[in-house]
Length: 250
Image (cartoon, rainbow, N blue to C red):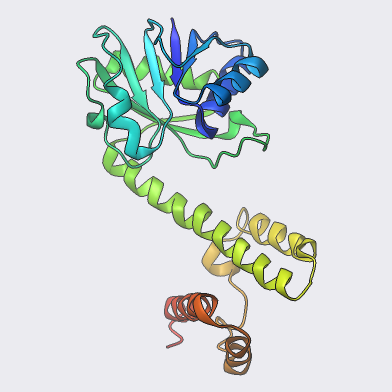
């Protein structure tokens, strides 16, 4: 089975790396960014091109959501299976006359961060049973956690991921802005961050909540608000309002 990955960003890199680590041959990695493709090719020993799309049985599109439809038009072969890796798009966004599917890995990908690919959940959606089995078998070569999922369910999986990952990471960034402004090393907070994440492996997040809002400690809340301004103050108020509402404190 010939597999081509389309894209040169973080998802494309990590999927290519996951496949090569399991000795799954890739016919090509294809995209616009020749420099990025060249680096991936050199590291993982995969043929690459920005001009010619190799003939394949399976094409996996790893590009931004806004580019998926346009990129999918580059695939003119009819007797093939094409999958995108988006958490929010339906498989029908793919624009060709081939068999359409989604191949969604639930993880945050950064180029320089090593990952245990076997722990990443993959959510598969196809048009027929044979393609479902094909992609499930392919994903199972790199992951221990592969599931079928409709687009309707996958939309909510992706939304949950935004809350659990993207928003949380943004709060880490805002926290670092505050610590940097006061010349407090952010490393001081890493044990706290690590324990916060570890705790929800054993305790429901709602039961694990601590802090001045859940204690309804108005004195501390007002003190903190005096230390903040502009966007950070609005975030602080919004978060505390949400916490209080969850615990029926207002």
